[in-house]
Image 1 (cartoon, rainbow, N blue to C red):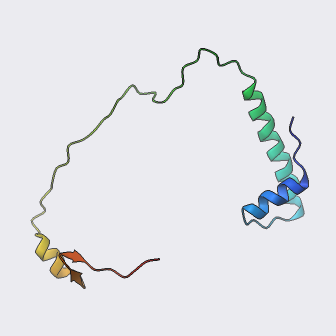
Image 2: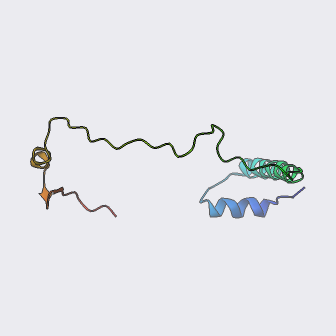
Image 3: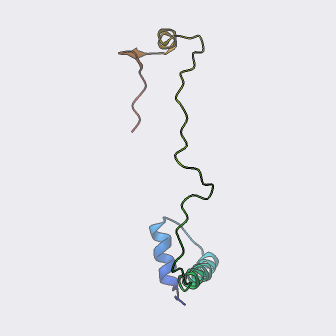
Length: 96
């Protein structure tokens, strides 16, 4: 079983920008070790001949037709209601 050290937990916490107290560090060390032990168990399973499962419902390429729904409001009316518009588009502030 893979042994997780206290330094490993502190390194993961630093990478995740987490601040942990002593009890949390000890708890996470145990939890991460248990998770890795479980994954290690799964890796020992014999999966030869098992097909990967991508879709369990049997549905393939389900598409819907695009339909324009006219709510009785024209583009011009909507643009007129916008605080500001440029080139038939609503102008909004930059978001960076």
